[in-house]
Image (cartoon, rainbow over all chains, first blue to last red; front, side, top):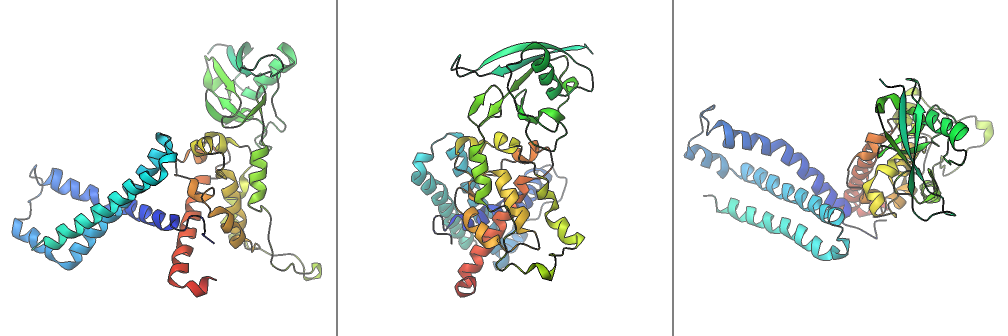
Length: 118
Length: 247
């Protein structure tokens, strides 16, 4: 049924989920850590508190999901931007490798960093 | 407001010149005149050789799609006074080969429409003696929005993907497929999915959304395509998780 492009629906699901994740989580995180805490609008949590939160397996899992799916969102969008924006569809295979490969690499890096959290 | 407006109308007459040129016409501009009235005025009183398509002049037939100041519009639903003091540029629809002046070749669009089987598909037709296929108002509402399409091709003209890749099946065809899929009397969704889940189908779309913006009937083809993608992706996951059930 999906003989020609078997993986396209999966990539789109990642893209779609990543878009939702990025839109939901990043504005909140950026607002808190980029604006509200530095400007003193809200009392920032201390280091030990944050570390304890991040150390929880559930937090790590959620953070990994947010990072990975957002990267796949980027990969899919960037791939089509290169295809259509720069009209270099003939470089199809290299573009796919760079975009989705980048997302996989980023996911592995995020997993490694989250694993290393004490 | 001035009572006259200038129309720069694209002219393409292959027997005379291979390039498109523009002719300027100064027209009266009563506030109730639409672009089509202007073109009819030109045709009747100024230059009878101007070619363009039109029929109903009330946004039903979908014949008079053209670019007005670069935007895909129905000439019968676009008021000249909105563009005062002008000038207004009128061109044939983008992304289609031009036959003459404002008339485009729509063969590609027509063949795409038939590819998605835009009719009610039944596995087994019930005999006439069993009566009609009944439908509740709720079931009608499911697909009614997508049935409003008048095949004016404005969405194809607005779609940058169709412009880049003419193989893309395009917004109106996908919305029309959705119109029949969502119809409670139809049983052809799986057949249509096979055609549309190919790369030239729904996956060609990158959700630019221009099709929905220019649609004069508020069909929302972009929404139809995204719904289709989700449906196709869910079926893909189902087939992956339960390979036997999907067969």
